[in-house]
Amino acid sequence: MNKKTIIYSVVGLLTSGGLAGLLIVNRTQAQSSNTLPRPGTQAPAPQNSMMTRPDQHFIEMMIPHHQDAVEMTNLALARAKRPETKKLAATIKRDQTREIQQMRGWYKAWYGKEVPQVAMGTGGMGNGQDMMGNGQGMMGNGQDMMGNGQGGMTQNGMMHTDLVSLKNASDFDKEFIRQMIPHHQMAVHMAQMVLNQKTRPEIRTLAQSIIKSQTTEINQMQQWQQAWFK
Image (cartoon, rainbow, N blue to C red; front, side, top):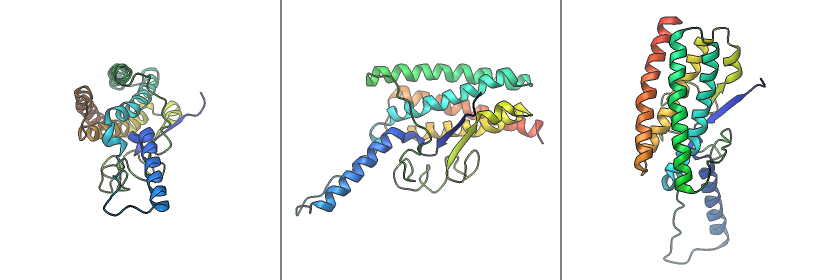
């Protein structure tokens, strides 16, 4: 297996839309520098894509995030030694495969096309801004996606899931849990953020389900960490 390292940006939820929003900002700036505004007029502020199309961008980023988890669980079902790990992996694979299928169906019905491939390592806005376009961090207060500056984040604000390290880990169960906890935490925060937007009821229901189920699984894995790997 070739080395596969999947990078998730803290601002990943806006990869495609964020770039479009950045182009709008740049175009507005260029126009303002070449043309003096007429007295009494004010150019409208550009709309952030997360604010205008939260459902679309949530699906575009959550599907590859789920797919990554499914790949991790496939490894766990083949390599994990503890029955608890295998059982959890089977549950994650079942639930997230079903959710991927749901989201693909919604996307096709709502937008008339298949879900595009997303370059998840591009950093969303591509300029160090957060998903709200203000440089304050994913949570809007200088914190990272985890809300505490810890757990699966590199120094440049990216989330790193290393499937090669997982596959080759001497203690697979330990490495699986070590990587899956922050992976779940990211999904929970993505879901929490989309709930703060005006979204379709289907997306709200899915986001609430992700928060509930994955928070429960995080707590279980943290308990195993304490009991198994002191």
